[in-house]
Length: 434
Image 1: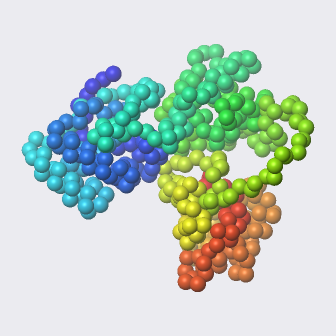
Image 2: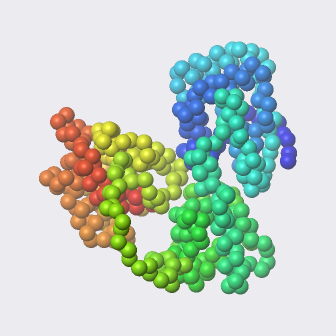
Image 3: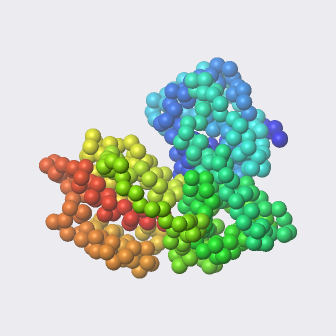
């Protein structure tokens, strides 16, 4: 552990703080802190000015010419805004921080004493043992369940089985472990920290159970290559720190033909293929259908959310967890259109689909659909639904979405909205995964 005085201007608020997941940049991270914890942030800023210190050393790591903050983002944010109130996200907060700067008076510090750790594995171990009490915003805010889940998804740490341990055992049994150096299991856990990444290499850890989802021999070959890359330090923790880094590495392996493809997929999962079928039994009571309360069903769609899809992610969560379909049909209808627009734009940009700037929504959707069809991502039936989207007399159409937004007399119904989502869900998800 190294303690250093670091210039405040060299400290960068973490855009991938586990409190919120990946965001676009430092400005977005600062804005999130005040959107979600404004009173806590105000309390903390007042406390810092009152005491003229922050008590706990921020935990930072070198990144390029600066230092990225891993613990102490709230404290560093307050110091940055006290120093320059213009960086506060609202006029009211700018006035608040000007007042705090006036209260501080002379002698505002140019540097902050920090704990510097170059080993990011060690940083995760430190973070894992902190965050035990909020003290109404003056102390460190306790992570809620979602923040803990974000941390586990990013790092692969948790109380369940270790995917790296499971992989190491199987590679050892197949004599495929690297012989020259020890496998860095923490880095492997980070790479395969979520199901979308695990599924790409041919495995699953649903419900804490290791399972092959693709041909075992092919999958073991892919895992052996990954193990070799990590053990030789050709790929290190810094390469796999965020979603974009993980996807870039897996995409490279995919382009080299290392990862298992659709032809290697197992019909029922590798560990279940020899499981005898259970005899059918008659239900003892009539099944009760599941009542749909949100537009997007609360299930795992296999999406990972890089920082560049910050707004897409926020809209998705509102439609999946927060907006009741019956109580808020107007808000749901507008956000559905926005999500479709943003998802199409993401795919068009990522896949370089040729579109004209004057193309309307239906035309852009059709061009994206043709691109997905040519790539084998959708079938002809799904393409037929997309083609019908241009027809104004259809329920699932661009005209319907336009009426949701612009017509004073066209009221969306939960049933129509559900039908709209069910028809477009596959395409929207594919566009967000690209």
